[in-house]
Image 1 (cartoon, rainbow over the protein chains, first blue to last red):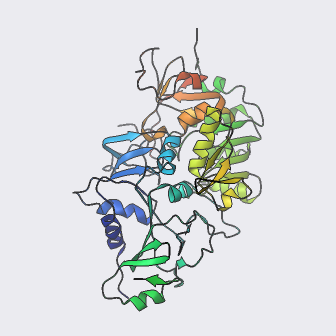
Image 2: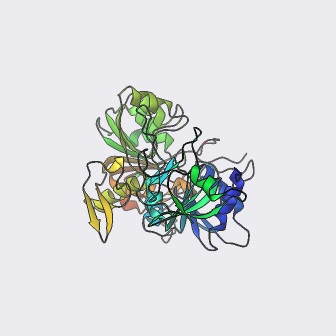
Length: 211
Length: 233
């Protein structure tokens, strides 16, 4: 099957972010989206550790470790940006003030349940950070992930088997094969990689897709 | 006369008792009050409950406090990191109790304590393991979980500028948990890099009013590649 590269996936997500939107990009794959926001759109980035209007990484030698993102990497502040404390930062999420957040995932269910914080393994040390607040907080929650696990199992499932991060919170799923919208009647295909057939995609997807 | 300025971190932490709940500001290493943590290690209080976003990095600061065996329980959102080996070892050995809290619930539970709120209903965590056993309620068609405030005996925070009344300004994202922790503790100790004359801070810009701060300690800037302020050469 043809596949989008990680940068093409990020580009595809960026297309679904409107001019003027306030957006939180999760750690990992979602961070790539920042590199593909078109110059003609003014998109404001929020980071849960207390900054909105976040800019790109500073040039080498100009790092300021009092100005970092949620991944604890040095960033910059754009004109118009602001700093605030943690309770305000999470009020921005929980209070529905963010337009979009983009998160990674282990699994997403057909009703938009998200599992992305804990494998549930007995010896795993759990860590949740802001994942649960982000999942339920933004007006639209996008998930960006591989379509299948390394073993080839679909990460899109009838019901998550990993511990949940949030219930019915995902709006849209972006993989290297397709873009799917979560609807009241299940997943609807929005877009898929050119050259692949619908049946081919359905075969590697754990829940029924509608067109 | 009110003068909250203490000569050293050691005198500011002299009365931390065994069994105290101690909030420590910082997200990763930004805003982490290293000098106060070092003083707490020297001071010797044990059986502590620590509230911080993380559970220590590397071998210094909070990680050193854990390694010294002085912490009974940690309340945090993100303990597991590439260099959290002291936490990992103690947790796996059953020597450290962990209360894992979603980051926004952690901030709000701290804020609630400082604001005199007895608890609040939040949608975060509903239907997950972290809400197991907690009271839930449907409000206007949405499900919420009842969360309790987190009070502390001491809060140790890092700010940028302060005055003898305890008014504080912070620096960039090092602000993080400082303002809410200052509200939630009976005794808040803040380090600052500069102590200014009363009246010198712009009252329109003061982030934490001195009413929330009991002790202020001046510390030097530390050049570091992995946290805090990177000093220009």
